[in-house]
Image 1: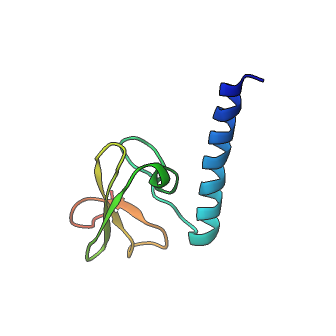
Image 2: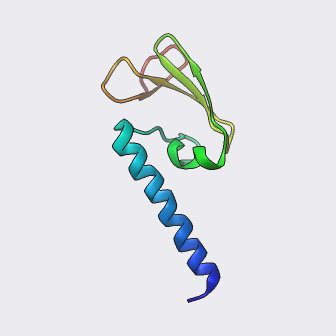
Length: 88
């Protein structure tokens, strides 16, 4: 097996393990609406910024810089919402 293929397989396996453990601990995860990357996985590589809001939180993706708003009061899981907390 080519060493590059082996490292790629190891990298993808580790990303899967990180997300599995995160979901086992917290029960949910956020996904960036722009770059489509899970915050638990890319949070290891990039620094995401979380701001507390009255309805939940605002997250700025460290990978693409997109700011997304998450309503954590409307449902048992975080819902993507607009700046006012209204779910999209």
